[in-house]
Length: 269
Image (cartoon, rainbow, N blue to C red; front, side):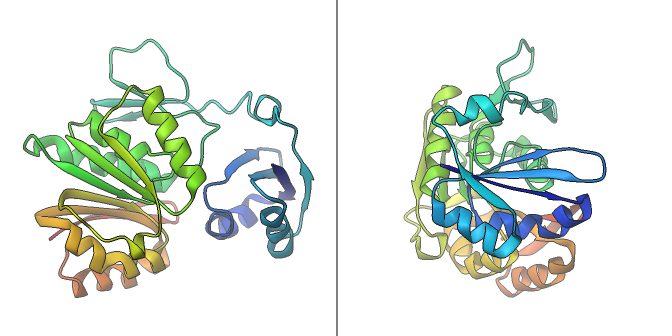
């Protein structure tokens, strides 16, 4: 394991955030707030991954000790995220009268506090309120599995999470065990090469716009008639092209949400 580091202004991080995530998918990102600058750190699985970050974004890298989590992540506990009245997403188990979903902050991208994940969670909660029993969910780009596992809390009979990063799949499976959630299957693979063998009432996809657009024919084949598709990972300036692609694939837009520079959409088939 290697730690890439650099200092940056908040404006730099806002402009480069999606590029950082694309360059190092599934990496654990640690942002340490400062005054005028932010100390940005990304944990990389390989030296090549760290070298790629240096090449694209400058900074420096160093090897990590085996106990790097204890050294770098002791304070990475996120405030609880309330999702409607049906779920509380937390970094560690706490006393609560509301159902909990524990997603440790040391996991891969997708602890629930990022705008794209938070919007997807709330759209997921709203969409599933009136679904009949037995509905199933496909989560593309599952990351920590947060959307898939939340779907099980919301009543899904079974869920399937896909991600092209094996480390993300390992985190998702670990989170399923941590939350004692069964009937949650996680597979490593390219969503563009995945061949659906079943149909789903609901699909979530928190991916970058180009990949979302390319995957729409696959989502259309995997979604049941009158099913719902929830997508995010879309920058505001990219939203019009995504909406056009959705309409071209015969999805119709039901709802659009914006949070900062990010957009989330709910569509139906």
